[in-house]
Length: 501
Ligand SMILES: NC(=O)C1=CN([C@@H]2O[C@H](COP(=O)(O)OP(=O)(O)OC[C@H]3O[C@@H](n4cnc5c(N)ncnc54)[C@H](O)[C@@H]3O)[C@@H](O)[C@H]2O)[C@@H](O)CC1
Ligand SMILES: Nc1ncnc2c1ncn2[C@@H]1O[C@H](COP(=O)(O)OP(=O)(O)O)[C@@H](O)[C@H]1O
Ligand SMILES: [K+]
Image (cartoon, rainbow, N blue to C red):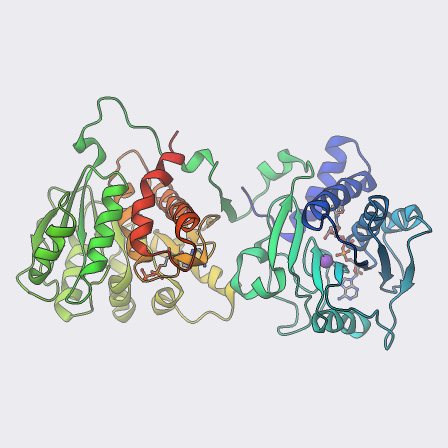
């Protein structure tokens, strides 16, 4: 699914009105209907009064239409209007349609509506039309709202936030919503950690916006979902053989971190690799062979870390990084790998830290290498980002410069492609914030890179989607707190089964 810019969102509204031969008021009515349906489902028996705060534009228009629908459905509703010189046409239309029985007041400084515990407030002050930082009365209303023990539902966007760029004034007033209910594709703002405290839980409602426009819209941002056909795992052919699915090599582990190798190998095996060989420190042999009997094992001359690169001849893909440590000899192995490998590479964890500490190695990265940094590792590879939007700029610049795929991990993991496109992931949960989760992802990416049927971007996006889905399946059994990285490995099979076509 594409993620549109604020400008494209406005054009999409216009394109929909034109393509479907409807008025913009009719489109607003659809939006309000969708909001109302969501409201009925979320607050089915609400008896306290619903306060709808309306701004002067179409966001306020949505609020006025919602107030009418909620009133008709039997909710106690009150409307408060933000005074402005002029209001949009659809705002005026919905103001006229508001039943006289709904109390309406103008917001005024020094006389803001009281908001007791449990109050439900709809924030329809500003949406995608926000043009400048909130100031004056609008800022005072937002501060009043944020200080109240109210449950806030933001319409389209929490007021004060932009859809696709940092707030106009960093640290300026923004509504802190418990829920944000939006229309059409999700907004970029919803996917970034810096906005989480404002957006709350977000929901997108389908209001039949023009798919033709969306298909043709030029945007670098995408959202990967379970049903997306372009990231599915192709079914195995009846006569598939272990060689068909590739032989992967995993370089991982050091003394005290053999678990990373074991977890990565487990994920690679569950990811469907045909054959797996792990190269581990000599002292890790028993641990590895005992815990992963399905894999073959090569041992390093060093007992505690990796100092040798095996012959790469037999392998279709090589992964390096989990639990590796940062010994000088290990750095030399990484350099030799980058210089000599002719098959797809997957680079994670300490291998990324070594790249960050020896940036001259970046020039050796083979095209289409998949790197899987979390934010800290990515910062070591690039620079400290000013904010989450700047980090996305850094991500796009990096993948285009090195022609590689970068999996920037976190909630809504962002997969950056060599052409500058970015694919946010929809699956996963905070239970995955547990040691070893990233090692599991590395093994899964490695398995899918060894699968000759998939390209680098497909493999990376599918691995991230399946990894998060495995996390969701696991959390359904263990809860988030109880989830361990080993549980992720156990759920990769069912996750991939759900993603197979
Ligand atoms: N156009 C359509 O057909 C649809 C629009 N929708 C709604 O329309 C919204 C966008 O509406 P608009 O483009 O009218 O924009 P908004 O309603 O978000 O805000 C625009 C208004 O606020 C004023 N304004 C902007 N920044 C301000 C500030 N900092 N302080 C004070 N005033 C400020 C502008 O001058 C303008 O009057 C969406 O977020 C969504 O809620 C939905 O109804 C779906 C359909
Ligand atoms: N809140 C979250 N929501 C979704 N996924 C998460 C969340 N927190 C962590 N993850 C996922 O868990 C993995 C953690 O990887 P990483 O930070 O490398 O951990 P480790 O180094 O312990 O293996 C990543 O794939 C990340 O996307
Ligand atoms: K809003």
